[in-house]
Image (cartoon, rainbow, N blue to C red; front, side, top):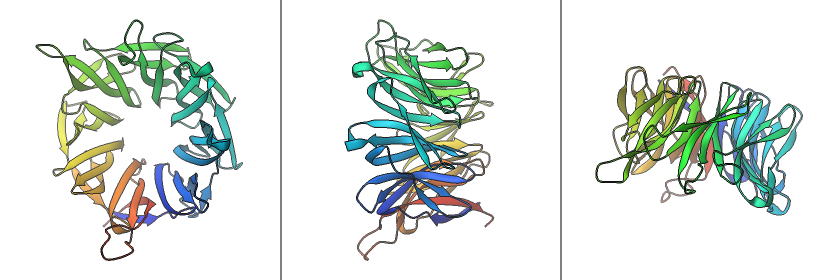
Length: 363
């Protein structure tokens, strides 16, 4: 299947990039005419690009969109700090999610009702995972596995109930982490352990499955990084091996990731590992349904779409320049990212990068 590419424009500056999308809206960030960088929302129906502004600072970026709400991060007045925000597209209102008593917060994921991320505690003593409820505008400290003085961070939400991430552990050095699952209904944080390894870190979640990296002891000492999949309802682990030791996305029973060079797809039903692409450095970044997207670095950088069922691999075109970059994919296989515009002269490969939307076509 082919793709057609659309230039989403900018907010008056030279560059823009898309970071996320749903069926109606593409979001991202764009340079503005006055030299700032603002979050934007692009209406896929009308083609209108909206400047979402900021929390008083010069920069903001969107990281997720769900229906009428956009979540992201922005600097505050005087660019003094970075806070997470939720923007209501109907009301044209940006709400500061606040912090846990410290100076900063950032959002990692958003499902339309809850945003999760990381925020500093009082006196910036620690960074803790948080959950922010859009309906009540309240932020909840999820704590850490090591107590109030420990550190934790979230990376995703599943089934509207579970927040997942990684945390420091009691008595362990700060760099040793365990993955965790937080039940937002019961306010219970579960240590997923290490499956006999030395550490675990969760990188993505979807539905009932979280994926990440863990350290497997090797003969003679030391550890080797392996990927894993963790089943939220049962706590069962699946070792994804050392090729797919950097999982970047999961959808249903399909996991994608890479080993620093080659991209890989793993089918949790069959235990089958398949290479994504066949040349250069290939980095899958996200997957939705059966479509994975990412970037291939074969001398130059190109966005790609990969279909797990057929193993078809499609490079995504630019906007007149040479290069492109993918960021996210929706349920219908549309891809958001950025692409180079036409170069200003024959000696340059690329013009400025603009936010781009690639839509599947029949041809």
